[in-house]
Image (cartoon, rainbow, N blue to C red; front, side, top):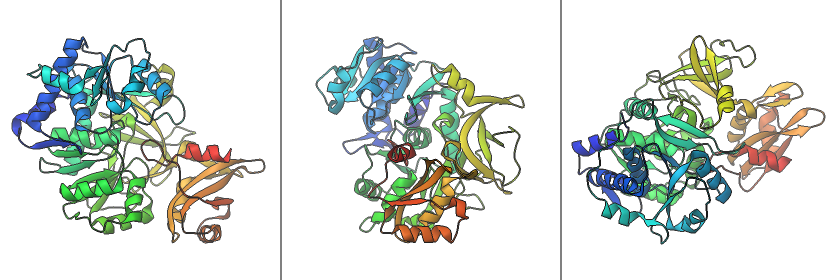
Length: 500
């Protein structure tokens, strides 16, 4: 079934309920369904056919949601583009996907008009002067649209990886992936149409698009979208809109903890989701106390749509630092020794592999990458995550680190997260990141970057009192800020570049 049908179902059930908002406007479910119909009609008039690719170079907004679902109703394949990508990166993604239409905003219309790709024929601009005006297209093509039928295994969307370690890769999500992910999250989190969400993670990433936006359409709930990370705007929106659920990545929560929430009424907030990268254990209690809400860690990748593991509101036991049990209704997990490829035992570390309904069928135009990313084990096709994890006796998963981030120093394996957890426990530390630097004698030496009111001596003393000698960083750098990726994750590639 075409995933866009879920919007019309929610609109039929509660047409006057608030669906999506941004700082400029609010749309009810009736209005959102109507706008998506109109945009689908406009695409048909422009000659965009089912199966064509429609690029969304847009910030989080009501226009993003309407264009995304409108393209899907037409049977086209919407794909968001990272708003931090520069001209050549955007041009590469447009060409790789074979985009026939590009939707953007006036702020980026001059850049968008300069793109030269083989298939791009139509430019649609919201609040701009070039190409087709978005508002005019919607107004001129108002009326019902018959949703193009799609099967569960047909392509629904493309989501591109950030490209921090090479060219961005187009991850394929089917209509079945989206439905399994949305229903899985709605069930796991007990979401109903009464839920009120804040979406500040970018919709060009699965954290904004498929942790909140698409599941909340299925739930018939309200979603408040913000175009960028701004602490005060996020807190004021949560206060004024009575937000009950918000999803953040760890660096956002650390920002909130460091600033505080004085002056904001967050009494409606019940649950905070966190994911995208491991949350420092030392900050979990602080976040829950500050926000007076339950903090639930989860785990996912662009390649898992992203639902893979999650702590839920009604589970019996919560364990600090755990991403929760696997989301068994939609996926299976396998933890195997990277060398022998055999399953590891309880509490033993290995690479996580995933199989199930939310797992991507593969990467676009990258057969060699697909061959490396997917493996056959016991008659099943598994996705390699690249993440080192362990499962305890209660079935809870703990991510130890990325395989690529592991530091080999003096012949010993060191996972940076273990060192970072110690650093976060030092008074005055706001953020910490640990990477390996080339070393003629050791192979790699451990270097710690820290933001906060702290000295290198304080940091070394804490590490020497907790870690074995070979895990203690050889160098401590106290800096003003740490580099972040476009999704606000810690950018360890940039940190390694500093060392080189």
